[in-house]
View 1: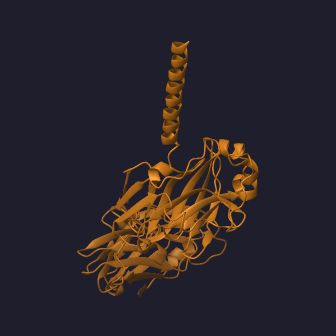
View 2: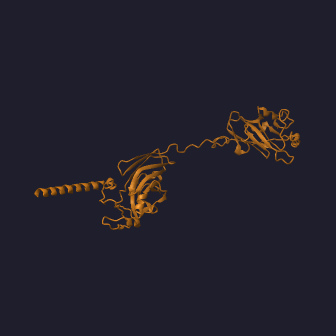
View 3: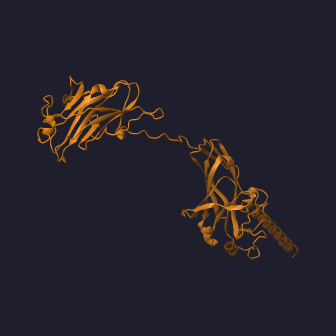
Length: 418
């Protein structure tokens, strides 16, 4: 940092009292600005206000009316005066450097490159100079409208330079900042296949830990009136992931047994937990089903199997749309899940084949079977388990057809004997 020797000519101080002949003189010792920065008059017309004093070797800026080289009458009293491109600062170093000016005057503003809004005062307004004789033009504005006393309007100016740190890329604060690079230029690619009705096979490629993969499960029914619509997975690795969604194959051996709650749907999601940070599961409940069964959607909860117990997941209830009430449950991986509702409410709404209320199971939970259709033995195959009893209906149809044939045969026999 080099301080410029700035002085005021006697004539300038006196002329501050006169509206037509006020002026200031700035002097700059060219040899001491900086080892790699020189100051000299601007080659434009306003450069006439600056000259090098042959005796002192200093660059002098003279805006008084006594300066015959200039066309003006100096700086007016009680006025705002701007003069662009008076002198230049030229950098001759071989590294990038910042430059800015500082002074102690409230009446002077220094700016760069002919733009009064492009201040070059203070480090926050520093300008970047590049190697190979980069130059910045300097002008200034003086404001004497509130000047009430006879005093110099500026005492000193300091030119500051700073080489950017090695880990600090050089940038020009006056330039428009470049947009930040996208940390995730390519998002995950998701492919969902349906190898059979009750299975979703999911492949997630181009995995990036900074992006979430939204996996649409194509209206995957997990129970009467309950659909698992999608899951959003956040990853901790960039490895490809395979996920499979199936009915809960362990529900017979390790059934849901949360006291006071009844399962209305279940699903098993299998995938590499070590690749997952968290997963959001979006479920939808049909409003018609809720109304028909008198189930309050706020009583519906989602449970996950942690290996030892059924844990109720943190769930956010969303607004009802398109005839459904959606909920989003968050877990830290993949597991078996049960959608459950208040058991007493469902018990009051449902009966067995004899019309008797369904009783709680011996393990404290409640097994709920939808009674809108005839109850049939649970098949071993998962596809048949999720079917709408179409096979049972076909068997009933065959039996009924056989009875008709038998009845017709008996009737024909009676007619023939008569």
